[in-house]
Amino acid sequence: MQTIPEKQHPILFQDHINQQGVVVVEVGSMPTKDRPFQSDNLVIGMCTAGTAAFMYDLQPRQFAPQDIGVTLPNHIFTYSTVSPDYRATLIIISPSMYKSIIHRESFIDYQKYHHRPALTLTDEQFIKVKDIIRVLRYISESAHPRRKEALGNLLDILFYALTRYRGEEKAEKVANTRGEQLFRIFYDLLLQNYNKQHTAIWYAEQLNLTAKYFSVTIQRATGKTPSEWISEMLVEQSKRLLSNRRDMTVQQVAYELGFKENATFCYFFKQQTGMRPSEFRKSNKIIS
View 1 (cartoon, one colour):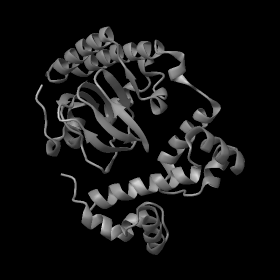
View 2: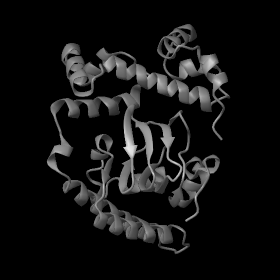
View 3: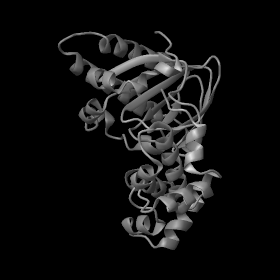
């Protein structure tokens, strides 16, 4: 499989992904560097060489050989560093294909990928998954009349395997406390409402919790308060829009993120980053 340079990263070609439904490709880079990135696609990535360090949902992560991760749509990546020998195989699944598989039995536990998106495969598991992906790539590039059906069946096999391998991990790696459960629910709610609701009280109310209990529980589980998570989400989304949407004015970005006044947004952004939105935009080139 051909390695694709950063400026031609396949996940940026949404029209092609939508047309194909499933794209399997090897990459040696990330879609962006040091900027927030969100995708509408379901992405399965398996590291085959080198390493990558990045932020996933505002938390630091490492990607090393034989690591495989399932990234559900709309989660936030901020990439930092990759080693020169970094290689990964990506299975990029379009929004329409995602909707067609989300209710299949093999994908019934997909919500688990929100909080534990990755696992490390054993040597034997790695070989088996590589074989499945090899066939997936062959079918994805074919013009067979039953191509979509075949891809769905192969994705079934892959997800059944990943579910089994996840279950074989040691119990201590799968901690599932009340605080962690609450954070997953809160974070999913935040992903859906960050541009409309900016207060921790609103999220506590949606979860039928007192503001104090909500704040203390989230802080104990994550080391950050709900308000800090909300602020970090707004900063990441601000950076993404300011970098990628040059057609939008700073004021339009502010409104897009739910700020009623441009001045309020500018003050918030400077308090969080140390620079005005316009300064940040000038220092960051648009993503190809």
